[in-house]
Amino acid sequence: MVGLGHTSFIFSLPFCGPNAIPHFLCEIQAVLQLASYDPVTDPLVSLFYAVVTPILNPIIYSLQNTDVKAALKRTIQKMGLAEV
Image (spheres, rainbow, N blue to C red):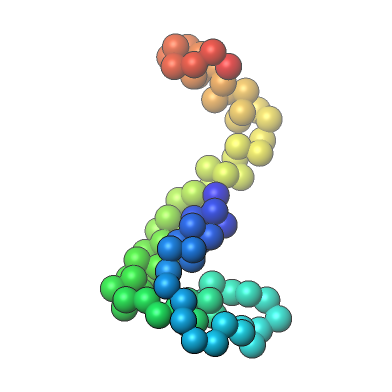
């Protein structure tokens, strides 16, 4: 989920100039430095790292647990939202 958010955000940025990243691993900060983006997006990126990622991580990791998946399916079925 988080990777998908990063990827969609990165693809929406305008890039110009050299496009080589002098790193072994491609960290998002290095990619953002290549983009000619508006400085207003800096707080958005900071917000994403500080708030959205920590909120999504427990949800993502708990959905890997089969007991949690089963409980979620039962809850959705009881609410009548979907036939799972």
